[in-house]
Length: 408
Image (tube, rainbow, N blue to C red; front, side, top):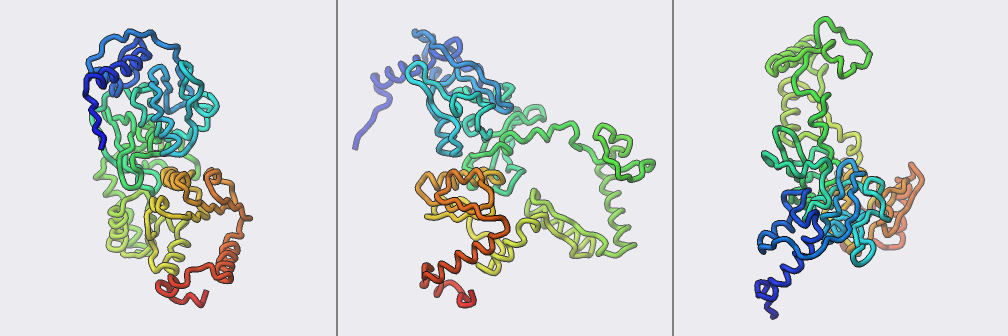
């Protein structure tokens, strides 16, 4: 096979020439002023380049119209990583290249300011940019973090892995981390939705109601919390709560108590909660918020496949020939999971979408059926009827892997 020597004299000379041309277009023909981790600066230093001999081209104007990201195209080297991140990874189709020659530049939609475009603020382009042309807003990318904390996104159930950049106890920014559920991808919530951590109204210490502040139906203004509550230590607050639970249990019986789990809790936390309720309270009155949206699917899965849990990860859509989606809006509710569906469609897979609304995913669908609200059961029954009547089902699979099919 062919052997390529990238370190020959001629190859290195060409590399230096390309880097010199790119460096000439940088602000003041020097290092990127927007990021300390510019890959261009790294290679310029590795190859020992000095001040470029070429004049700088006229650069596009700075764009700070977006609340989460800044656009500094004077450091853009037109590598098109952002274009590929937007169009091939996230499949949002917002970023593109416009014009030709020395006028070529990265554009959003039809040359709109980033803040006025259809950008969904997933930040994939920022993570892909090698020179700081696309960066988090307010120059937070220039601050060196004290530490990096690996974690899991606290929002939806996709389970995206991420890395928090922390400085002096404050979150600076978030990067996507390689994981089976996201492969470094994040959505706007995971990448930029962390400001609540430092919100002034966030509780950072336990509060106990003051004895001279009786309960009322009036809404409490956050700034007036001291009129109703007082700060307490964790030990005092936990003792106070335990005494309250014990009093209710002893006076009214165990069934007077109940607990409601949270979907943001881990499996371990869910186990501890039910343990507290069953052994501490002495009752089985425990439920979970997912009953609201998943009770019907659990029943259907138990009846259909014998297990009340999903049988495969959503990333399996990339291996499927046909994706049948009904009653879900993944772009709105689970944006990162939706990217894998869009990737599958771009790879030639068929997406059949059924929803009373025309969701954002419909533009990617091979077939989109907007049925009337409350007719989904009738629709599915009619589909099953046609499949069976016209013998479109896999008889061999039914014989080998199902029971009671004749009752259907």
